[in-house]
Length: 483
Ligand code: 5AD
Ligand code: SF4
Image (cartoon, rainbow, N blue to C red; front, side, top):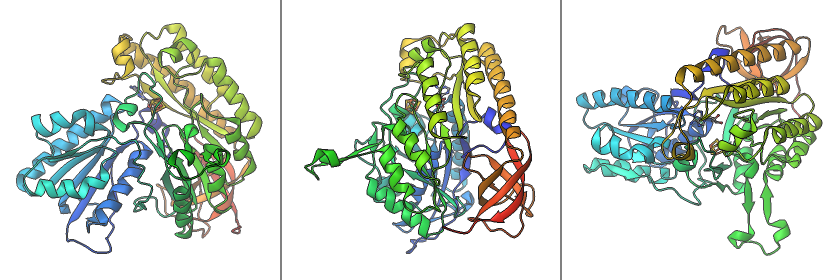
């Protein structure tokens, strides 16, 4: 899910405050649910699981918060800004409760565990708090609120993957869907709050993943993005579950899983996010090279270009190791687009270390980047071990230097595409005009072209004729037949 303008990339805090679409359950209980999501793709995918669990109890989802009996805000804790936005939003809903005391307001996701006490007891902003592993309990929690209690479940689980739940698809327009393949994270990058808010890493049964992808394809979807905090550590181990004796056949790793998904149909495009430089294997790259329907795009967050900073960040790789992974990508997957995440002003970052990030960018020449100022998060290793000692103005200036460089690299990459022909999966009308349609190529670039009668969900060939730093413009050539 690329932000659509260069400006969005610069200040990207994930997606913000989007409401899920209206859906009707098979059997209605007459109550309406409004879910608003913040943050990463995983949160948006989780909101679909939540809608599905609530639909099984008869809740209809609505896009209009004014119609709702239950409002759930799916929250993000990754940076302080994200939390500030959610708090402001909760203030709005508190006002609504004054005129509608029956309204149930709850928070879900990453802020749940961290802020349950202050939001529920001290500020009394919400009636219900459910952490990322407690969504099956939501209908009960809502009922508890109905009996006058404040309901909380923030228990993190070692095995919850919601494997058996078919998410209600909410805002993908029937073309592209997210499929969660694992939950939690064990990496403990020192700046990151995710291992605390989302708990231990666990992988989902590969057969349930493949079945979900097949169902999506049969329902008309043409692209899946396999989601995990670190997809390269995906591992399903049957023998540990006592289901198989022969250990050699017992495990499925990410490369194998991706191959299983690629085989669902040559017309189903496969994407994945996020890769980790310390764990990404050549096997994954080989599978990418083998299947045309696996997109030639990798999001490989570097965070910093200096080995000493990477060490303080506890990332588990050096600058040189990162370069060797980039070389491997270039070797196996010709024309692969690479994007990254970069943090400016991490604890103790010197000018020389910052320059190393800029020089790494020059060497790799990313197609896209998500760029952030370091924001200290409670409980993290960095908060406990290091001083957040880079002054705000220095963090800001370094971030601008990183952004300026990325803008010029993105523009250069897009200019380099002029004259090339790409296969685009049509997503629908562009934002500017109903006569212009848009879609992405395998490299994840957004391409805009005159409609020429095409429909969303079709694959078309488009010749690139012009660009900005964020978008490619092209001429429709022809619609591809299905495989
Ligand atoms: N401050 C700034 N950026 C952060 N990220 C994660 N934690 C922090 C933090 N404390 C960024 C990383 C990560 C992306 C999802 O968010 O770059 O890859
Ligand atoms: Fe956070 Fe690191 Fe896990 Fe990503 S890999 S979620 S940055 S701890």
